[in-house]
Length: 507
Image (tube, rainbow, N blue to C red; front, top):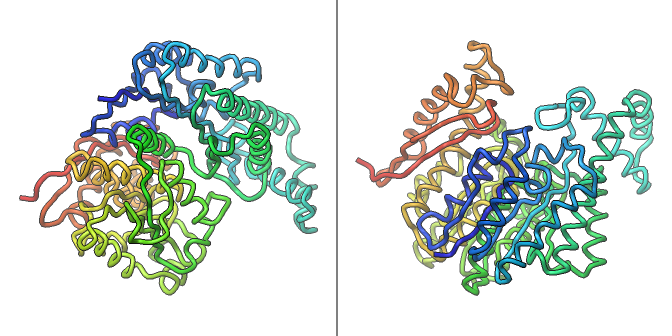
């Protein structure tokens, strides 16, 4: 067994559970801190104890996959709320040097987010003042950036003047000063790559946009990467919660000396050029980065490929999954999901090649029409990987990592269990049950989207019941059925769900 020490981005299942689940049934042992060290939502993890745990566990490890946001700030949300100085953050970050002092052969892969700037007003994951001023903070950065580039319209300039006249300056100062600290931490992380302390670094962009504070920070960090000649060892692209999975796949490929070739096939002619919601570039540019980051290369032909990646994407503007019953014309005439499914079927049954499906047609949930066709072809449990949750990049990183691991270890029971988790969560919960329970059930119980009755209250029981109905009618087939062993609400809200699922033989 190879031992990989893993520090997750936070305690949510996508970060804490997914990489460990992908390693089940392999010769890789993913070792994680106990959940009590990880904090909860806005409460930071115990950084000092996390460092002590990491330094001890790394002494006999083969590799380490590390969230620097957790090791510096205590997690992803604390990275948006902290009051640390650059000096305090740098002192924590430099502890990484101790890892290779104790274990020179240790392979260290790390990731460190550029702080996001949501375009809406909500304090659920941001500072309290973002509840009332979030949209204005985003627009001040967005229009200000466009103004610097000479792109701002007269209407935008007028809106900027109005915002500057009303936005409390102390909120802007607090927000931008924290961003400045985090940006310097990004640069320090690049320095650690340049000196050899970190072997490979991903700087993912959570909820990105072409203009604004995050885009400006991204350029400053990109300049630092170039100054240190670190472009081939530091990748920057959209993503966040999937990076633990991506780096696990990269480390497994690296340990085995593999560089798998991935052939990419899109549902629509214009699909590669769609800019996904919450991202800042053409879909195909992100696809290439996710394949590279997982340790692969894009294949020029199907014949050359070790794996096939079928990308279900819109033909024009991307929509949210909850609106798929009333999708824009680009979903009907701008793509061909029948051809996509036939290609997947041919790759699996005739070419005997592992086939991954990246279901990124919609944001925040699966394309239920695609699942229907995959089920009709009896392909659901033969896929090398599948994902359709949250952002396009979250899904890409998750399913590509699963496919890379499948290509080595095959269609194990653990692999099918992870597929079942994706079908239940991405299709069942994200695309259907979440919206239904939020709108039809919660009002009668006195709850809402942002607050339910804890992790395992009445709401989680209702969610589990509705998920079973969905699975039995839309996922289970003649060969397999899915069992849901656990269902809970990790942050006591409706956005994410925690699940334990497994696949058993059909009766």
